Length: 73
Image 1 (cartoon, rainbow, N blue to C red):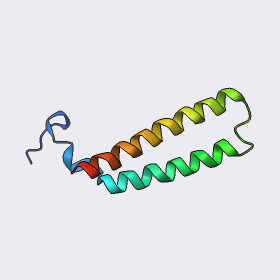
Image 2 (image 1 turned 90 degrees about the vertical axis):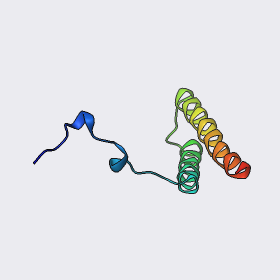
Image 3 (image 1 turned 180 degrees about the vertical axis):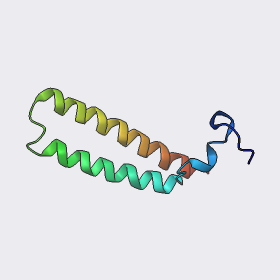
């Protein structure tokens, strides 16, 4: 059996490719989870709250970018 070494094989067959809609849905779910964490008592100190706020901004920007791209197509 002549099998290519790992370094020469394509990664495309191993990837879990998402559509933009699926990615957007996952981002919305993550945004909702992060909102809950930020509002809850688990985010006790200000440093953690700021990290969660920063994460929310990044998630929302990524979700908006996906919807903007869909509108342009």
